[in-house]
Amino acid sequence: MANPKKKSGRKWLFFAALLVIALAGTGYAWFRKKDVPVIVQTEKLLRRNLTELVVANGKVQPVLQVVINPEVSGEITELPVKEGQRVKKGDLLVKIKPDNYRASRNSSEAAYKSALASKTLAEANLRKEGIEYKRARELSASKLISESQLLEAQTGFEVMTANLETSLHQVEQAAATLARAEDDLAKTTIYSPMDGTVTRLRSQKGERVVGTALMAGTEIMTVADLEEMEARVDIGEVDVVLISLGQIARLEVDAFKDRKFKGVVTEIANSSKLPGSGASSSSSSSSQSSSQDATKFEVKIRIQEKEIFRPGMSVTAEIETRYRTNALTIPIQSVTTRVPKKNGEAQAAAGKTNASPVLSSKEAKDAQKPVEVAFVVEGDHVKMVPVKRGISDDTYVEILEGLSEGVEIISGSYKAINRELEEGKKITIKDVAEQKPEDANKT
Image 1 (spheres, rainbow, N blue to C red):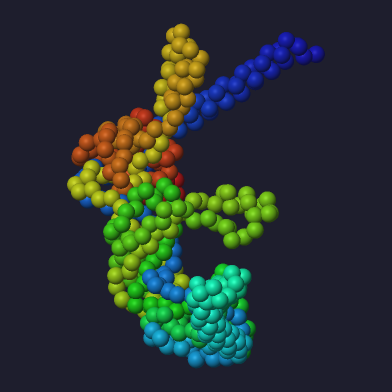
Image 2 (cartoon, rainbow, N blue to C red):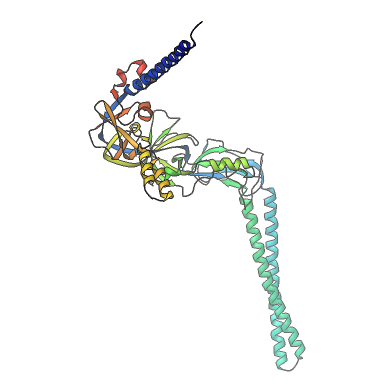
């Protein structure tokens, strides 16, 4: 029969061996991970000229374009232009059936002539009553007529005077009605207000259009001057404060590949665009989506070169906002963020003092706030240095504080800078071309 004590001792020995092996494996893995150097690329801190750019997308549009809307309603009887046709100022664009407006003009003209005739009659009656009144006064002075007869003559003269004044107002009213009828008749014929090109034709001959003097009528066509074009781009509220009139811009139009056009900022919107403002706001979902849209401001950039641009072409603008000469720069990917390691020490110091809970909470919050840092090469390891940056372009960023010219900083890889590197971390410097495939996959 086996000894129970021996079995129990073997069991404990077995578990102890497993524990030692597990601890040894964990320690070895931790030690190996700690000692494995991070493969990085480096670059010297040098001085360069920097130009900060604001990039925005938009559309190419004519500087001057006129939308042709009728002010009277009716059927289109003449439409002698086609889309894309060039027109000169004063050329016939569209004619609306004038029959009703011509009849209205003739009626108003007859009313005006009738008012003139009434005025002439009133003037004659006034002259006649004037003679009768004068004669009555002379007879009254000679005591040949009674006082009532004189008063009757005077009243007749005053009535004729009032009739003449009424006739004069009727003439003015008829003249205004005639002028309005003639204006409506003239509006049945629309001429080109400028030299340009018919860029859009929405109506056809025989269609009925609606027009009023109080609101925009049916859009018939658009006439634009394609000789002067501009890019209308949308810029966010963060970048629009950097934009000013006269700034230079480089424009890339999708239709003209491998070409860049020069532009100048000519207009900056004072108020933001309202996304979805034309849609109904009764739907709660549409209201929520509108509130989540980014705030944009429209900026107009005059294109300097002449080319066959068409309205609505997509364009990308790079606006030069700020410029630095001989600035201290590092690659833009070399600047990252880290939470300060002294967070625990700050909290411990705050606990030892008698500071108020509000102040301690504020200090703790500030200690947890990430700061911008760069990694400087010191032998076979790196040093984490807080930095203050200025303007930047697509590749480099200006360093205002924290680094001096000539130091060697970590420029790659992205994974190493943003995740792996810490204060005192060991490194191995290799160019991208020298890396093995497995090393490249790690970075």
